[in-house]
Image (tube, rainbow, N blue to C red; front, top):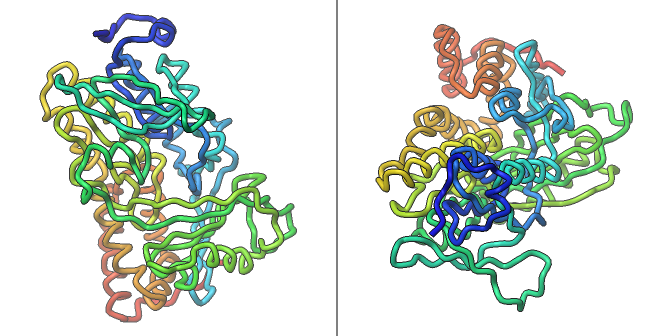
Length: 421
């Protein structure tokens, strides 16, 4: 049985195929690639499995901190957003400018994910282009993986490989989770759909601003989530999400494009997928499997933001798996979720409450957008988003926002705010 060699050259590990890998990472998105790269740097032999033929529906927004934390070159950004425009059911628009504290970077998953996979491969992970079909646990708790190579005859026999541990980073409809966890163990979802279109030429569409993301709170677009127009340089993502059965996401996106003046823009691709909005209570099976990213439900409620959290989750899962392989203590696998929730659980809890309260109907959405005009709300929102932590340095601002929330909920007049176009 092959074991990891901490001092081995990454290139040597990539060319010398072991009989059994320390870790097989299923899924080559931001979470899986970060887990694979981190594990290789910890001295582990890693198999990274991804078909490389699917682009995840994603608005592509990442805070500037993500570039620093995960060494992402600025060349991967296709645009920078310096403001968000919040749009109410009535059409009222509130502009929230970031100021000099940072920016929202926009990536295109069609190029961003392959870059991350290439980076993990260059670090020393072996990239297998294909998908997981079945997984069986052997008597010694190692795992036998049946893999279907991409771009081959579906009737071809699967490739068999072995791993001591598996990290499931294969998205909301995780095959790893389905195979190794009870059927009822899955996070709640909304369904997301978007269209990548050609961005209009400068000045062609009056309401379109290349450095401003539009977030639309309107029950006609989404009865329980929101719609968006996110510029990506030459391209723009237009879409919406909803957990309401029967809601026509494609039709809502078409109406959104018309209302945004983008109906004539050429559609480059259309994509849809479920979007989990709550971390699972348990990410591991106690023996040889750990979930990460969308498979574990680490997408922020209310906002649907997932890239930064996925990459962090992948790194934490790599640390947890490495510790487990050293000690064989099941408690080591639990540290990934424990560390993630310690850092972000409170933010996820607050965002969940915000979604439940303010997204329930258009009357509350209208109040929510009105609140977004408040300077305290804007500052705390941007600082929390960019820093990925609740802002603690100004407790009085939190108190002011709390009472403004309370007044809005109770229908008490809290003062007039002018619309910012």
